[in-house]
Amino acid sequence: MNRRTERRPRPLLMLAFGVLAQASSTVFVSTPAFLIPLLHTERGLSLAQAGLLASAPTLGLVLTLIAWGALSDRIGERWVIASGLAITALAAVAAMFVDSYVALGALFLVGGMASASPNAASGRVVIGWFPKERRGLAMGIRQMCQPLGVAIAAVSVPLLAASGGIAAALVVPAVLCGVSAILCAIGIVDPPRPPRRAADGEDAHPQAVWRPYRETSLLWRIHGVSMLLVVPQFTVSTFGLVWLVSQLHFSSLAAGIVIGVSQFAGAIGRIGIGVLSDRVGSHLRPLRWVSLCAVVVMLLMAAASALGSVAAAVILIVAAIVTVADNGLAYTSVAEIAGPFWSGRALGAQNTGQFLAASVVGPAVGALIGWVGYPVAFALVAVCPAVATPLVPRDRELAVVPA
Image (cartoon, rainbow, N blue to C red; front, side, top):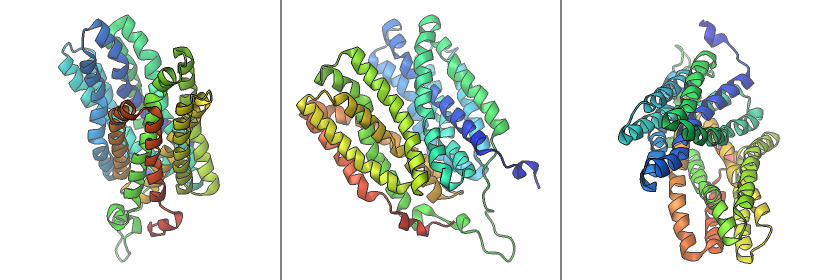
């Protein structure tokens, strides 16, 4: 038997590799957004042109999430993650040496397409090596890597861009992705899977013939729930700052502090809800609770906006915690329901749906706020989690999922 297949790695080490891979790819995807001030004020690009460049990695990521997931189902997670990060690093290095903004955008697009590989595959590495009773905590920690990646880009990219231009700013994602690719190629061990084909005289393993999208509506419903819950999440993150400043007359400094605290609290909240799901022995029940709480916090934001309440800052922080808490729960549930031969594609579809929904929130909710004002807009956003709540599957429905 192959020596690698006999290895039983430490789950925490696999979690560390998953976090490193996801955080590194997030740094690359986030970098162009923090180049907008340089591109607009010093290079003469319009905000629309700079915004288009900034959106290129995210577009590439959305285009390839399911494809990377399908490849990880076929060949395993280790080489999918390592090769995707390596291509991302190469795209970042190449982008340092181009003069054309068209070429820069194309490389951002290619790098974004490659950076989707950890999104689709690293979750399966974590889930595959952690027992069910510890997956909530593990996935809560993994879900922190995205705000961590954004934070790294926010701290490093503007400073490097101011001193050395675009090329200097791209050093950080290039180095992080390159080093992560090497470490993941060396250190990641693919989680075990049952054999795809049964031995002579034996029945095929139930997971090998399981077709989750055909045989049950569970995955479709969780995808739908997650897309609906993206609406309050991105409403809070996108419009929270301007709401505090323009509607409730907070100073820019005070509002910035509130937003910073809310983002940190939201990241910690992801771990907390993961621990809770481990304690209750279910990821779906807490997901339903989170959905109900999202209805409440959006209505509280509407009330605070209408009344001009000084409690708005506290409500916003609570809303930031609640509206991001579903991500790890839904992600873990999707992987468990899909099984080892479909989890890559299912997680790719999960992320694709969330990114598509998120892309609509900015213009749609922004237009809604302009039309009816913040209080009514926040109240209408509460309809999305209200619709999502009854769609969350019950634990008893998981009986159809093969063990």
